[in-house]
Amino acid sequence: MADNCLFCRIVAGEIPADVVHETGRVLAFRDITPKAPVHVLVIPKDHYENAAALAAADPGLAGEVVQVAGAVAAKEGVAESGYRLIFNAGPDSGQEVFHVHGHVLGGQPLGALTGRG
Ligand code: 5GP
Ligand code: ZN
Image 1 (cartoon, protein in one colour):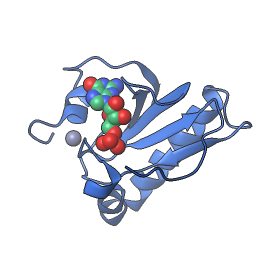
Image 2 (cartoon, rainbow, N blue to C red):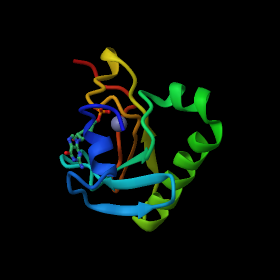
Image 3 (cartoon, rainbow, N blue to C red):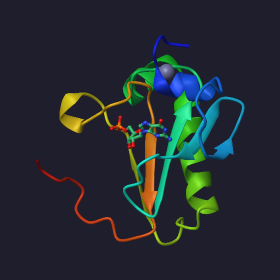
């Protein structure tokens, strides 16, 4: 567990989360400030800063995170209507929590891929 990492603390059960799916190594829970009707965060239970660091260290686990994102989309009923899976990395992306997480967004038309400002 990384020091002072919010998502490590959620994995440890120190901070409550609305869990929608869990495997041995991956946890999916609702974003506290949803940006779409479906907004779920998918994280590996182990700490990596971003998706590239995770994939470099453990490609199997990176694959499992994406697999769980698909399972979450199906569970939330957006697999057919469509969804977006976003991994932010670094300042220009607006990444706020430095424990890799995929945002599963859906339940409405999601518009253009990038917004400015
Ligand atoms: P980022 O900007 O790092 O890609 O996304 C971080 C996300 O974590 C944001 O969408 C934010 O709403 C969410 N978040 C921040 N604090 C908490 C929390 O305590 N619980 C949950 N479930 N989500 C959080
Ligand atoms: Zn962490």
